Length: 106
Image (cartoon, rainbow, N blue to C red; front, top):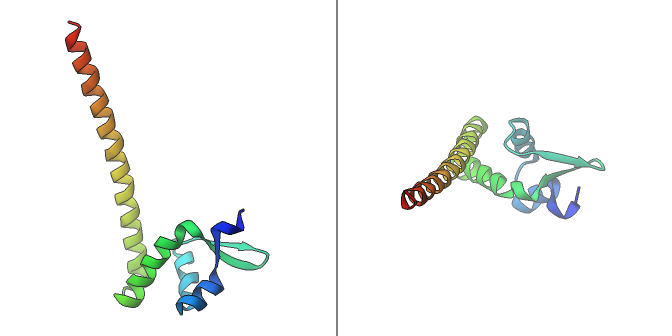
């Protein structure tokens, strides 16, 4: 695994003044994934946005871990539905284009 895409959890917690147990709990709930390499804990760089959002929910909006988990799952479902809608729209456009082409040749 490329260590350039990893953020050391201890360093992140120190820099952001975040409790390490909060990060561990987010991992337990599946909100983020902790990667262990050489006995050091890391988070993937691509999960930084999710982690920052969870921190904001918890520390600024006082949302508990269970609430963060629910919000995370709902946002994930919304993203899936948006992608499904995008694919469906593209299929519909292709179908309409195909239908228009068929009408011209009749």
